[in-house]
Length: 177
Image (cartoon, rainbow, N blue to C red; front, side, top):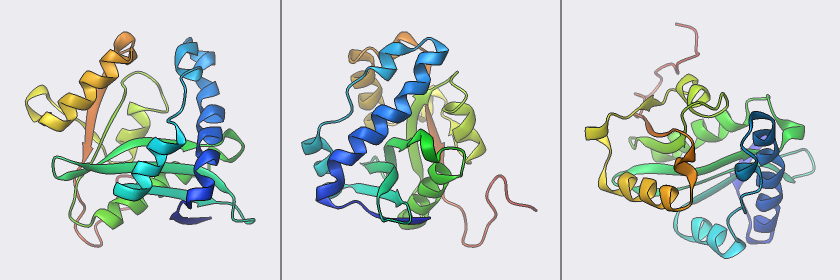
């Protein structure tokens, strides 16, 4: 497993990864999420140009998972993490998140997610994220939530989460003490 920045030529492949990863939402009664159009290539290019666009590549150097993030209110906000189902349950999503945390140095990570989907909020909690109380939600996160609501995502419970930076050498939530 190798993590690197996505190349411009690979941006269309990220859409395919997200389409494939989204299929699991059908099984839990959320076909609208499975059918939701991934970000268009120009928007993905914006993350590459202005934010962070990382991929995990297989042995043939083909992307099999990706993460896009951008600065929001002093933190790195994870907009999307997707792992192709052929490569799921191997720790690739967590590796991308941890890699982003290392890139961010002393910067916190934030994200918004479905509260009750097992591979969303409960998964992120295992990755060291905590739900934010209403008074902790920053103006930028409020705007992201407003956009999500306008897109129809509030049909299901959603929440904002944050992972504070770890001191150098500090163990993660699942590391042995």
